[in-house]
Length: 177
Ligand SMILES: CC(C)(COP(=O)(O)OP(=O)(O)OC[C@H]1O[C@@H](n2cnc3c(N)ncnc32)[C@H](O)[C@@H]1OP(=O)(O)O)[C@@H](O)C(=O)NCCC(=O)NCCS
Image (cartoon, rainbow, N blue to C red; front, side, top):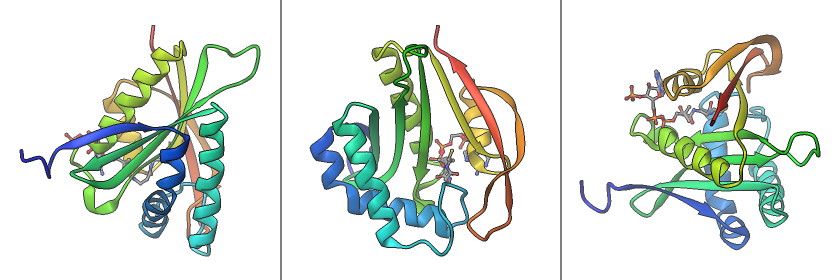
């Protein structure tokens, strides 16, 4: 493997998160265009994605979210978030969100690398119960199963696909103890 092929995952601090907004917006746009149910519809556009990542960068600055970027060589091709739950009665819990790998870089291990980084950060933050949900028909369901997450069940019609059709959401958890 040359340096250009090497997959790396880094944690973005507030400044790096802000600087990465255009690249992150492009990764999110690609996910929506490729039909993933990730919070947005086909009618959404660049300004929606920029606004979304601007909010995430603010959450990173506030210490609510740990943001990761995956690269192959120099190019940013994937991202994931660890959302630290702030409720007084859930100090041990965090959620994984927006695990996205650009469609031209999938099945190379970036998604698994992002998840490993998020789990390591959760341990560091003393969070030992992780939760996430995902499209019942998406590739991510297989990714989480492979990484040892426990599937709880699927809620039908939980969200919409980008084209407006129904999307059931499958919920998972993972204990890090
Ligand atoms: C889900 C997603 C992040 C996976 O990223 P990725 O970089 O392709 O995943 P990896 O290469 O690390 O895959 C690791 C393992 O997950 C499973 N997997 C991932 N994609 C799969 C697919 N399309 N079909 C079957 N298994 C798959 C496989 O077991 C794979 O291991 P293998 O390639 O050795 O068989 C990517 O497909 C994506 O961005 N999808 C659209 C956005 C989305 O739905 N995100 C989830 C939001 S919760």
